[in-house]
Structure formats: C-alpha cells, structure tokens
Image: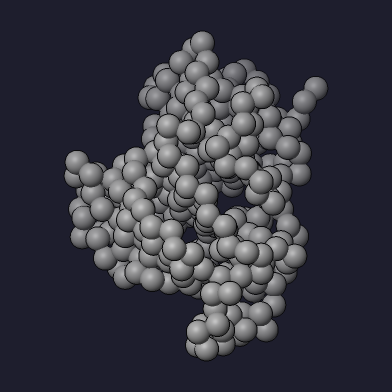
Length: 288
Ligand code: CO
C-alpha cells in the first residue's frame, strides 16, 4: 500500500511589513519557521486597500536564490538589472533565478480594485548560487490546466500531473507548484516524490487533508483558510472539500541539506559569502 502523507504542522501566517511598506502575510521566514528546506520564504500579499501595497518593492538585490511570484489579481510592474521590464497580470507567473546577483523592482498595482498574489523563495545549491541569473515569465495562457470529472481544476505552474508538464521547468529543486480548486464534495489525490518537502497553502474555504473517511482509524486533518499545512514524508497526498469549495497551493521540492546563511535578500552557505555580497554591492560589482 502506498504511504499517505499526513499533516504534521499547521502554520498561522503572521502580518509583516516588507519593501517600502507592503503589508503581507508570511508563513515561512518567521521566528516560528525560519525555512522549510528547500523553501526559504513564503509570502501572501494583497488587500482591498491599495495603501497596504502601493509603496511596493523598489530596486533591491537578490543573490543565491530563486523567487517565484504567482499573481492572482491585480498587476505587478517590474524591471531588473538584466534589462527585463514588464507587467505581470492575473494568473501570470515569474520565476526568477537570481544566481550571482540581480537587482530588481516589483511594484504592485490594483486592477478592478483587486490585488492578490504569492511569493515563494526557493534555495539554490552551493554549486549554483553564483550561476548566471535567469528569468522565466509565464503568461497565464501558457499554464496548463487539468479538469477532472468531478470538477476539480488544477493549474500546473511547475511539476507534472498525468504526463502534463508545468510551465516552469529545469529548476534544481525539482519543484511541484500547483493551484488546486476543489468544488464542494469533491476530492483530489496527488503523488509527491518521497523525500521531498511538501506543504499546502489553504487560502480559500476548508478541507480535510489525509484520510477523509470519518470511520478511518487514521482520520485526516481539517485545515481552514488561511493556513499552511506541512506534510509528513510519504508518496501522495489526499484532499477533500467540506461545506465550501477548497482552494490551495500544493508546493513540494527536494531538500538541499546544505548550511544556510541568510541576510535579507541574500541566502548563501556561509557568512563570508554574505559579507562578499555586501562588499560587491558597495563596490558596484554585484551584478556580474
Ligand atoms: Co525581490
């Protein structure tokens, strides 16, 4: 029998201020959860009040990581030291590999009064921390969607379902990044590579993760929005909506098991490498 992953921890996001004054909900990179190897940060931004985000994220550097922005609503104007410039719109994804160094700006704007999205940081292994920066922007129309008979809709940002590959590929951590919509009374199962870290970020409705049968000796866990549920190791996960539709991000990746030295937007393996990043920035040698 295959090994079902269980919820081992539920994280309540906390409000933090970032950038030039953006109010957001953070689940990874907090006092409670510094990181979840290979994931270094997880933020949920968005508000009905533009004052919560208009200040944005003016020019700032990154080194040693990848940042993944998935926008649900609104727009994000961006530009960077590689010469990329554009606007992310609803359901677009930007997967940025900072490698040796990138300086960029991310400015959220409302569209029809709305603005909501997520940013995930994925660690790079020591051998790729100083790799050439790379940038993948994926328009919503290029993100594959799977529809099941009982109404479940899954957007595949990264990873693979039933032979359908996600839009973002060739990422070292071999990540899976799915946006899962489950209507009332439907359920969903998804294999996840054994040994990979996995979590569900429930941002709409509620559902049971694990065994949903009330009679089952090992009953699953009810998770309500907005919470992050971290899974034990295993081969697959199961989710079932209850009285409301359930929507969550399902994210997994291969742990690096390497030392982590982090300082703001730089995540390296040693404090010497962090000092080097600061020196490079001071000497205008940050962007290679
Ligand atoms: Co950034």
